[in-house]
Image (cartoon, rainbow, N blue to C red; front, side, top):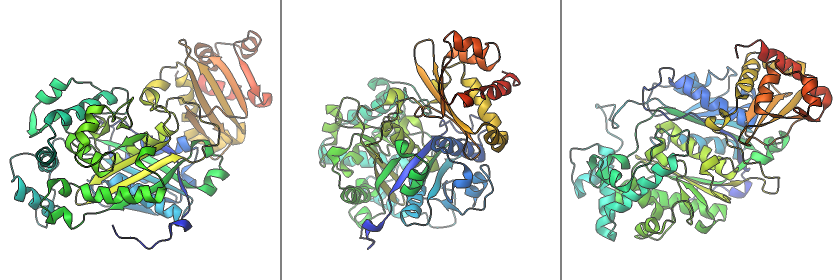
Length: 540
């Protein structure tokens, strides 16, 4: 990949300050899951995570592969109609990360201070198919490599391309089918701890190897499914981060590079190169060089495991091990918890799912949660540097390196962000009701309350959940699992909080009985009755 000639020292630093995603679903499983709805869910979660309103976003980069033109605008209209530019992105399976790198470039080039990167996909069931038959297929050169090497067989074309790359690796380096199966076994196991994953089932190696054969050496459980879903990230400049006090959650994109196919992709008659090995290697080398980091600095990786064969090949392309040594990396356990790297802690595409436009942004979300210490049961111990890899045949390879933007700031308390963790608290319903009120008339609530309320709630098993209700800035927000910081902090047990907010527990009695503990602005604490009144009038 040739140098762009741009002086990287003049680029502004770029941070991810908020992430969000939907649960990835089997296509058509949910009736209420058209692309505007799924995009709104992911983007709203990201804005709430960042504590920003849609009015603060200056540009939107929106990625999808299947759909009519300007679906990006229609998705963004669900968030507001502020007239900002919306850029539609389509780069095959690398679409989400392409939207991300575009947003990053807007900020590092000084064109914006706050950008939304959004991706979504509403897919059809079954393997991917060509849409247009009356024009040149953009992957005709790639398919020709397959025809010249192993020949074209009766199987889904994507499975043939990546499966043949696996065959080539076996012939060249002695890799065995069990190595690919071990990768699928690892990723399915990782997904059991991810509430956003399309599949959360663990399988034995035998089950994986004996599942229906798709294209040798790939079986069904080694192939990613088609999926519906969305992911989003809020990107910000350093100026924006500091102005809004987001240092504790800001994850810096230290380096992010994109490459496309090289002459070797087609001239060498190599299936490994045809599915992106060389463009991945180019993007990775450039990303590490620009970041001033080495492969040994990396702790956690989200990479493009559309098929188990591709994950193994990508270990070598990224430089995580020497060429021909990926099977040894698999056998050593250095690709999972307790090893040198934890690769695809989310479950990867194989288990989490692969809604094409959302995949790169879901990878970004997972890595940000890992670096913030908020990945719950998936948490990688002492994660400091994260690596992302996303490819789209035809072709685009995106490689990014992330680390905590302001490591000297106090570390965010490691609360989980998953819906399942939040829902273990009875009082979660109260905060959903408060959020609903803010969504309807946030400006009026901010005018009335003028404060940030931190609620520390303890469940029966001793687990503590934190909600921060911002009724002071913009149109207000409700965030779960963030740093416990506010103008006033309220400490209560879960059942007491529920009863208090429903008017079943007298605040004064609760205070004197030690059930209600208050720190900070007592005047603001007196305004709790406003939240109490709103909850009492609801259908809870």
